[in-house]
Image (cartoon, rainbow, N blue to C red; front, side, top):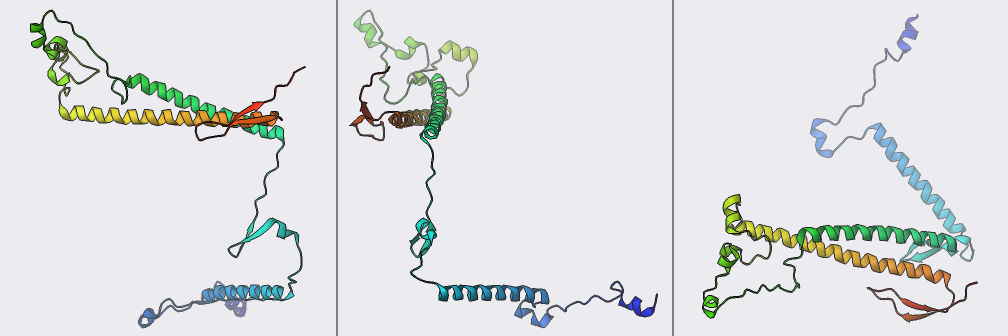
Length: 253
């Protein structure tokens, strides 16, 4: 192999390296390399050519020319917005879609009903707001016994548990089972807070189930209107109830 060819090999040639920014010039920022200049130049030329083409289009445009894009766009606040075309479906397809919607909403409503029943079974609604207070009548033999009547002694429990309408253990149970924290104020407050949170959750599930029931009725009403031709509206639709229609009776063969 000749010396000239060997010198021409790239493996032998020294790699050209651009110098970096000098130390006393670091305050001026990053020193631009050739690759950075190429990217900047390409971006500049691309933008310049785009503006040149748009300027030429604007000069050649006829303001009275009609094109079909005008029918599907509109100008809003100086910006062209494409109008969304409404999907075209047949009546049969629409009925199937509404049937699927009813099934989905009904499935969710059944789920809410199961949650409501589960919470009711756990809480028993013994101290719920708005529930009429129960009366426990005790009969005494004489007025003297009435004056000396002791409710805690009659119920065989401690006085601290008289206000509880549920889970009121007797003195024997407290002595036998050694239940801790039953009369502790902090424990009772914590239990009351948890119970209130469960009641709030139950109220939310009941309200959600009512909304889903109304939604199901409204969807069913819209579905029935597709099959009936002659109808008279009796009651307007509200937030909590669907519209009520009266249909003309038809004889079926």
